[in-house]
Amino acid sequence: MNKHFLIFILFGYLITNVFSLTIGEKVEITRKVSAIDKLIDQKQLIKAHNELSKMKQQFNKKSEFTALIYYYTSKIDYLSGKNYAAEFSVNLAIENIDENLLDNKYKSSIYLLAADIYRTIGIYEKSNDYYYKVLKHSTLYDKNKAFLYLTLYFYNNELKDKAAFYFADITPKTLNDDDISVYKYLDNFLGWEQADTMNWGYKDPNIASFDIINDSVYIGLWNGGLFKYNYLTGNHVSINCGGTEIRDISSGDKNIYIAMNGNFSSIDKRTGHVKDLPELNGINCSKIEVYNEVAYIGTLAKGVIIYDSKKNKIDSLLEDNISLTKRSGEYIYVGTYSNKFYKIDPKDNSIKEIYLGLKSPVTDLIEINNTIYLSTFGNGIIKLNNKERIESAFLKNEYVLTMTTDNLNKIYCGTLGNGIYVLDGDNVSDFPTSVFFESKDIVKLKFYQGRLFIGTLGNGLIIKRIQYK
Image (cartoon, rainbow, N blue to C red; front, side, top):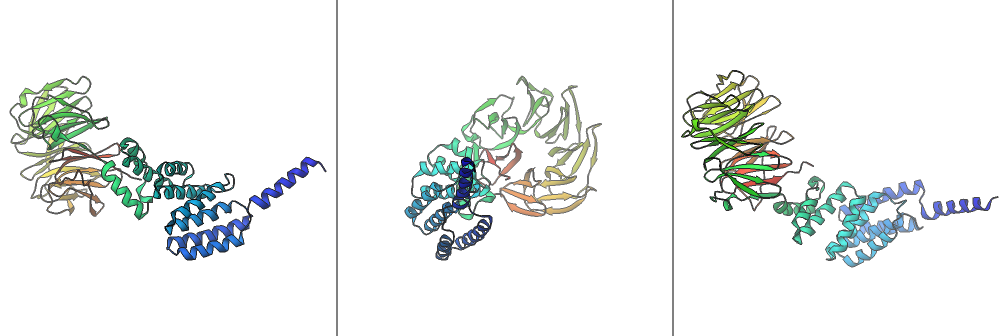
């Protein structure tokens, strides 16, 4: 027989019988490992240790299981507070990892345990090295725990940008209770940002309105003018728009329109040129909505003024104090401070009253799957049926000023005095805010690029990174 063939047969025999387990043995080990994991989860560490000892006797040949023996020995020691004994065993586990035979799930668990042990005993650089290894071999939970503690390390070492980088990749729902408490701690710092308008220009912390175009937020202040704020860099510049008492901002394809107390102007998106509309000087504007470069401007006492920038034409409708102008679908909806509600057809600007018998003015409108929700100043949220009649109500007696939706069709409701609520179907819950940027008076909400922008009275513009994972 060819000697090379004999060597091949001998080598194959050694690999199969010394370094590898049979399928039957692997099935049995998997079953026993699951039982040990369950005992560890139940904090029955002594019983888990006894079961592990039995396994060592039953499967005593060198194999990929050798690394798992040392891994579970280390894990039991670590959970028993024997950190240095755990360190010794986990290093033996790492030394016995067979890259070809050991499943990635177990490799990830071993590296994660090593990272946790070194973090606990304060050897952070070594801990981070193993967290990085976890990212290469990991299950979803292991990867998120690695992201979490890398975030914590960089945040504690004042490397906020690097911390924020890893924080953005965490999927919170995969974390256990202990890790979630760490996540919530970090979220207070890394999940929130603030455009502190109290330190800008006239030092006005009160947002009247804002609109977002690419990476810029156009922020209008009640008494502090207009600013362009880059939420990625944190830089801001003041824009002279002809007035300082901003009431609303809305953008079309070509222009940004600024409604003010006493005047009105537009900004060319391409050139930045500001154009004043002298016909509206002295008129107190309250709201604005843009449809095909036609601005529907709500005013106090002068109803809705319609400004067609293409034709340079001005019309007006109603004689009332306007609380809302909002586009939804093919219509512009209008609310008044006399508690009336209308819709305008932009094709011919015909207007129709929708009688709802409201006792409070409408402040905002959202349409989801052909269902209209109205926020009101004093009667919470009203849901309309397909016949434009009230079907149900939520947050009764709340002063809701603004609404927005996320990509799951949850409605976020900003109130005067009670912060933010979330309406998910028929369920209402509080939306927790950062302890550092807490504000109860919310005037505008908008989702954009994975962030919730929150216009407040008293705390400027607050930005929350939203995790949908």
